Image (spheres, rainbow, N blue to C red):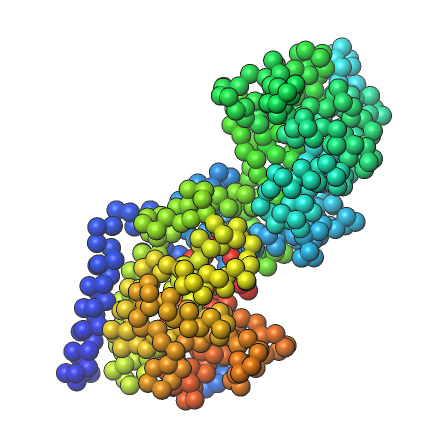
Length: 574
């Protein structure tokens, strides 16, 4: 069928505009754009007059709108260069998985009676206990004095409640000292019994911890308080402070002025064996750096996904088995904490390092605004979407279907990384978020000003739909205008075109077109029903040709011909 000349001109303009902008996006950057493959999730549903058919199409589309569950992640954060945003374990999902594993109901307090962690510890220790007598007898036959070395934090004393309820996974050495001096740590599950069993067989037990000399007395008192009887001052090693009599011992020689964990711990074990005359038959710790460096017949790694303390091995020593897992399976809802075991949960410190690498953050919590794997992925993703969205807008405009593109705000049009990380350290604070919103402090999400410009020039009305509230709407629109999105407005052509969520105070109440299963609407209920309203006559009768968001909950629920998922591992809103 031959199109009317006006329609042909419209289609041609749209195609040229899209192609030109796509070329502009990639101009001078083609070499960099290949580093990270785009991970767009796009689904297309076709409109239909049948409610049942439309519901079925929505259901089919939503099946593709689910987070990834398999991940490859190096412990040092380097995977942020290669895996793409969807390939990085989402930090909120990691937190939920860790909470499930420790039986934490969301308070930051671990269950002290039963949890996957307690059961895994019981299994590990029962197996190790069965070999104690055999190991001891073998050492004695060889004329050796058998000993076992134990780390402290999360090896003999459990720190979960401090790390999570108090510090929210943001370590604070001053606060840690409060806990240490207050002797507030419970025993690590099953370990009191294991140490007692080892002593009963005849082993001498040593403690070797990264805690410092000023914390030694309180640590020994805490251990005794929770049931340990084998640790004594002369067989418990803490790290020097460099003050007064607390100086680096002669038996620890390090490559630089600041000793690594492995140098300190391995050379202390060497001292126990060569100077004190013991044979360390077993070295027990929750960090790989507790175990590296040799000077122990066997090692026992205890599970701990709540922090990661890396350290280079001793020069010339290679221990490939003493390395973290790199492949993980994790459900977005945290349920994998029931099944994966501690080593199978992505370590939260490694996740943070991976996210930082992805955003080009050198460790300050501030993203690189010029070039990073994230920026390159966004550039490639938008370049793919631009011609498709342009064509959809132009085609719907030709048919007088009143096309629109709907976009979320945070990390879809406005970039929140610096707030989430430098300011909040991945611990969301709604009061502080409001400060950023009202101050209009967010930069544009990379490449998205181009996508929005293409959509508008191709005939689409640009509509915002965000979880920010109505008291934040004016500041949000002003922020958008300031960073290059002039297309957003509270109203266009007599229709509302920027949707924020009601506050429940004054005139800001739940609209009649949103019906929720409980008093508190879910994100999907609010957003999908608002999109349905946008497409209804009372909402302007728009045809939402594309719905763009960084969260799957921005996209699920239909009322859009196409869904475009942008990468964001920094939080998860189910």
